[in-house]
Amino acid sequence: MSRTLIRGGLVITAAEEVHADVLIDGEQVVALAATGSTVAEGWTAGTVIDATGKYVIPGGIDAHTHMELPFGGTAASDTFETGSRAAAWGGTTTIVDFAVQSVGESLRGGLDTWQAKAEGNCAVDYAFHMIMSDVTESSLKEMDLLVDEGVTSFKLFMAYPGVFYSDDGKILRAMQRGAANGGLVMMHAENGIAIDVLVEQALAAGRTDPRYHGEVRRELLEAEATHRAIKLAEVAGSPLYVVHVSAASALAELAQARDRGLNVFGETCPQYLFLSTDNLAEPDFEGSKYVCSTPLRPKEHQAELWKGLRTNDLQVVSTDHCPFCFSGQKELGRGDFSKIPNGLPGVENRMDLLHQAVVDGHISRRRWIEIACATPARMFGLYPRKGTIAPGADADIVIYDPNATQVISAETHHMNVDYSAYEGKQVTGKSETVLSRGTVIIDQDRYLGRAGHGRYQTRETCQYLI
Image (cartoon, rainbow, N blue to C red; front, top):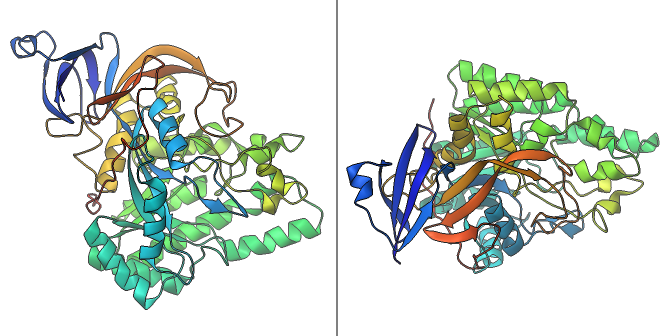
């Protein structure tokens, strides 16, 4: 590959902002130098990209996606091909998806199945977490093997009895194994046993509309499960990463644990920062579009989540991208909210929504890059190959126009789903040019990528200790 030179932009990483030119050779960044300096002026390249007036940022890392996930008798509508292409359009150049162990099956079998789905189909680089649905002596031993192979994070569920649920004893055993082998346990923290009781009671009372999905998945049951997960991790001596934190009281549990010096981390998602129970209550079954778990919360929770991102009690913003079309999929739950497939689309919107948060004053530019690029890379063993712009890093780079305006809409998005969770929302900022390992895959509203460009990424263990 010839050399590529990005000139004149404001390079923003989690650590600094500097007007610099970036030199790429092949798939990697080889040098940065101050724009206009003697060193930079001496560089030549076969391809020169003018980034004057633009930001030059690391490609986004979405550490929580579910492409092709079977759920509730259907499957997520984005394939690895369509979903990774949509990620590229939104300035995300790496996704970490979830391979699923089925009950009674091995971790290896689940990983192989998901590898087969993704291989040769991804437009951007990808990796896998491992969902543990069946904690047994053999699957605990498999954790060691997977960590050695670069699958270094394992998700367990306190929710979904009969599907993904693990009891406290199984969770403790997995955490103990993670403490020994370096694997990071990720937790879906909701008290699923109690939630199932409330679901049954709501349906028996005729409360079947989508809004009741949010009402039965009570905030207190997220906080309780978060507290319990923290205590189990403390007993096991293991770090803990709590996914899709939506409630102020759950965040308070994380903050308290971190104040005590525990290695506890939290992720939230754009839907909890920008949407609310008002969306779940939309009439004519429109609320079903916003059914996800953990559920959307009342608007007052948003301010606490933004505060948590500023104080670093929340470290990562991922999407939990798990799209189901309104027509034919979400509609499976008409007359019974418990049958609405859980999940919503967002992999294409995350970087732009978080830049809007910069514009709105919720976070700084460097914090934007930290929570969307650098910290996910460090948390999940991809740094410094990913998540920054520095010599030796993969040339996953976005030329970002901070002044462009766009209206988010299903008519213009590239996700394979028939609605947008943010329909009609105007945001400021847009990815103009996207490079994946030195190759331009998006350029001025043209898709230049291809299925199969994306490469599987093995990962080191979590790089974070408080």
